[in-house]
Amino acid sequence: MAMEKAEEELERRSKFLNSLILKKKSVEEKQQNEHLNVSVRASDMSFSLQNHAFKCARENLDAMACGKLDSKRLALALKKEFDSTYGPAWHCIVGTSFGSYVTHSIGGFLYFSIDKVYVLLFRTVVEPLDH
Image 1: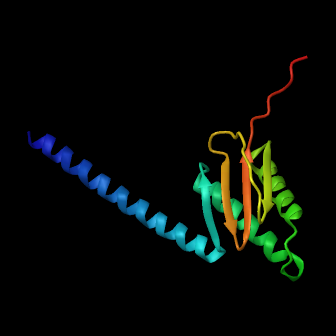
Image 2: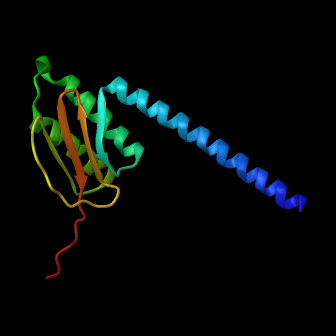
Image 3: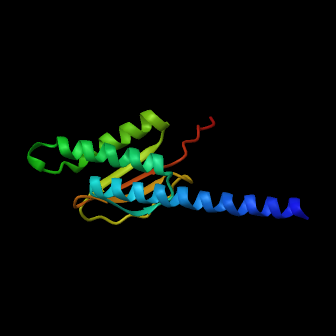
């Protein structure tokens, strides 16, 4: 009986500590997103991949001459970065106004805004053709 109560107490404390850790991570991610001026619109991507996309987008936007958006250049930079880091096949759409309807791999979808630009980054599975 005492052992069961001790196990229950350990479980309760473990859940409490996990909730504190998740809250802290959430606050840190929100602060980083605010710093980068990013807002996630929809995603099923891990936070580490999201942060990679945000940083890559921020660096490329900041490097553009006179603050003029080159949406093709930003889309290409994100696609190349994700293809080379995480393997094929990543797709990227960048602009201030567009519609889309895509099929993506699980864990490979991110739609976010940065400044006044919208970015859709997603991955599809590449299967070899059988001849």
